[in-house]
Image (cartoon, rainbow, N blue to C red; front, top):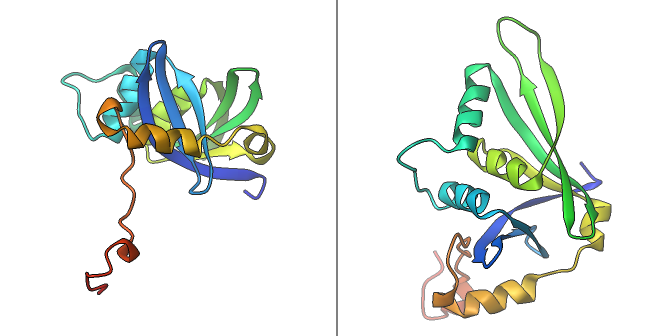
Length: 169
């Protein structure tokens, strides 16, 4: 998908109005904001925490599995001001029907909540990605504050060059 940028969640942070979701491709990071409950739902999966009862996105994911369907990918397709638009791609194939791919208009927050549950790829259209501000420095600053940041933060792989006294094998 050369006109798309593959991204992954690199951090989630509670805010006064909800949750900031940071998506990155290893070079650039973007941010969008979601409702607190959906932020908590995404954070639970990313942090490996299993809630005592299934959340709404867990139920939907289980329903997809039960019908032989899965989330293939989620794509952020448009931004209009502060509003992000996304499409969820679902493939179904079972003994009753042949393979069918369905594209659904959905909020990016719901797409992300389902994608992380089903290990599906997450993309941003290239022209949308290019228009969005790089928030890498903001995220680094927040990570630097350490204890003030709560929620999921992707662990960065340790750079062996940072520890010259260690053997590298």
